[in-house]
Image (tube, rainbow, N blue to C red; front, side, top):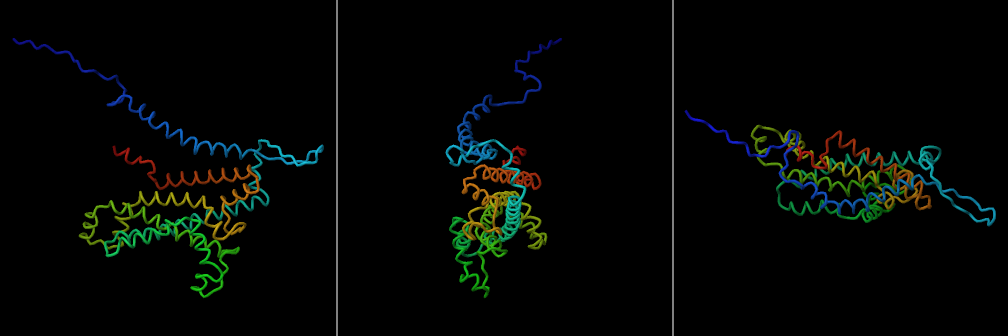
Length: 320
């Protein structure tokens, strides 16, 4: 008769409900290492935002001192900087700028996305001189916006190249729809290569075997684009479109330099904020900036939620 002696379990049992952790204290160490960067971001980004938000509630009250006869200015916290935006003549100016900002964003992003995808398809092809084509396409994006605006201002001058090509005498830089169209053309020329560059980066990681399989199955070029290329480059394309939307919503320098100030057809929310600040009305300027900040944040949130832009790499975390 054999007797089996049960050995005691010497392995350390983990309390129930506690997740498995191979490296204790890694999260705390990571927080310590990231804290200097977070502190710098808080000072560079967080403090200006809080300061502008506080300033947007400050209303300057001007008066005349009865004793000295001098103009005095006092400050008080009030909501009038926001309420005045939406009423009277100020409200009409605001909604005009809001409409210009929105139309610039929608029209330019749609056109730039279409042209940028076409550029990416061309740059992705293997042909002689491909490097030169890629470099030439990216040149407009590398030019500073103010310099680009000056270039297009010369093109759209009364005796410029645009009128010579069209055999017309259009006053592009005066008030009217032609000024709005000039800004759209100049912005498309400058920033469509940006979308093309990001889409090209997405195309570079698509395996060639996928296209070979589609070719064996008899898929046409158009069907291959819609069924393979576009779905696989969607993450890069969505991020590119989001960045361009956020950039156009803050547009200031291109219409300001190309068309000039005080042109209602190209006024944006950023230009209105600059007007108020230039006239030393810092409270209303901060209010315009805050409204624009909220508008940009809402657009970015809706865009991410609707199209599922993977900005912070959540897809990678879920795959792990």
